[in-house]
Amino acid sequence: MKVEQISIFIENKFGRLAEVTKTLGEAGANIRALSLADTSDFGILRLIVDKTDLAKTTLKEQGFTVNKTEVVAVEVPDRPLGLCGILQILDEGRVNVEYMYAFVERCGENAVIIFRFDDPEEAIRVLTENKVKVLKGERVYSM
Amino acid sequence: MIWNDEFETLPREAIESLQLKRLQQTVERVCATVPFYKETFARAGIMPDRIRNLEDLQRLPFTLKQDLRDNYPYGLFAVPLDRIVRIHASSGTTGKPTVVGYTRRDIDTWAELMARSFVAAGAHRGDVIHNAYGYGLFTGGLGAHYGAEKLGASVIPMSGGNTKKQLMIMQDFGSTVLTCTPSYCLFLAEVAAEEGIDIRKLPLRVGIHGAEPWSEQMRDEIEEKLGIKAIDIYGLSEILGPGVGIECIEAQRGLHIWEDHFIAEIIDPESGEVLPRGEKGELVVTTITKEGIPLIRYRTRDITRLIPEPCICGRTHVRLERMSGRTDDMLIIRGVNVFPSQIESVLFNIEGVEPHYQLIVDREENLDTLEVQVEVTEQTFSDEIKVLQGLSNRISHDIKDLLGVTCKVRLVEPKTLARSEGKAQRVNDKRGRKD
Image (cartoon, rainbow over all chains, first blue to last red):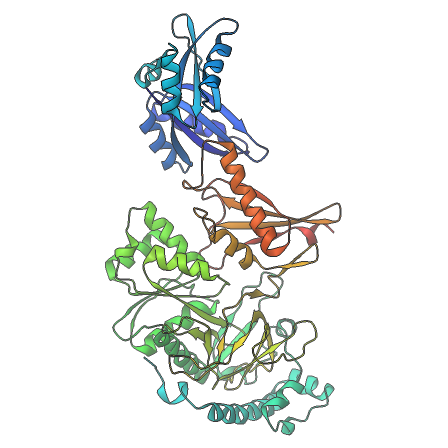
């Protein structure tokens, strides 16, 4: 039920982000969703791509520091209070969200949000118990 | 094992009487042949025949690196040029280089002391010595080379650079002893890992590293990554080159300085006073057998102390504690003395942090600022900002704890800090350049 995300360390330097995307593009990996967290000195680019392992190896070969983490993709009703409902469920289930970002594509009528939990297993249990749809990796990579 | 049993194990009194005899000869010789010494001795009111005991040495004036520059290139040579068979020069990062000349006997002495050093480090005949010190004006390459030949080992004159080729040779030729700077040693290990070479499985047994200050933690790292014993060697071109002193493999604690050729003193770098035996200060060396360019009380700018206790290896020559820095590497940041090696030791104590770092010192609104740049590694990297910020905070906290200096830590991408194939450049001090 989990989705593989790669994260890349990026110094705040001219052109670094372009180099990441160029490396991925030339390797034939397509970005499905992304989020960039930044501080004054560096940023962390988090990506969901269609070919995770290929993307990770290619980036490493190019000298980037790359990490693989597991995140959870959740279907969220695309209407006011849609996300709020999900967060309340997580809150009641005492599940902590580290960070989250939205997917570009919709899944039918619903939006897709990527969540990074400190305890993804527990999060998935709480969500599915509350009838929230959690997307499988393969489904997400091919969206 | 000991190379020269007779001289390396001389009883204390015998060393001191030999030192006195050789010192008297040296002082007389430089007074007669080097105008610089004739003048400085005269100015200090010293007659060369007044050296009656070793304490009298303290009355002689110091020789500074600047004196070598002022007498560039040959002004301090004590013999005519037709007796000089080799000329070396130290890297002139500021102004002119310092030039040193060797007579044939000086070259023989140097080879002898390097051979002693190799044996002290556990090398022997039959070893394949991979010499990755630079060959050229720098004394490292040729100094180690002649010593290795004198020892009767097989020496590979690699010189620095061309790291992938170094690794190929190391594998194919079965190198057993590696001589290079400690930072280049770690760089070799890093490239080996990238190339998929298990450097620990190679026949390499001993590394002899010097020419830049390095910490005990860096030694652990080298020993762990290469699966070797790492030995600290000391030398400076003004005095001889590599082989002035070396750790013995038996103790790996303190560097024996060859006292039948040099006299070591420790002084307070501020006042110039000789410190009581065992106290830490600046090392001052007098050469007592050199012919080409004998130096009286040369201020090395290296910070160390003498370890007077006898060593388990049987050598009677006094040991210098591992250099903790150089007076001219020392940064004064908001009034606090900071040695790059201290920051290095903080970094080594944090798991996953690589020893590649750079210090940027600057001045903002009349206040000194210190920025420590550290490479992020796969081990320290995380997808969460708070983890990386925790790492920066820990580094600056530990530095503050140890040194009392506030610094800013900047995490940078791996392999972006310059790797050196010779001496590592750790400090970028921008303060002087703006005024």
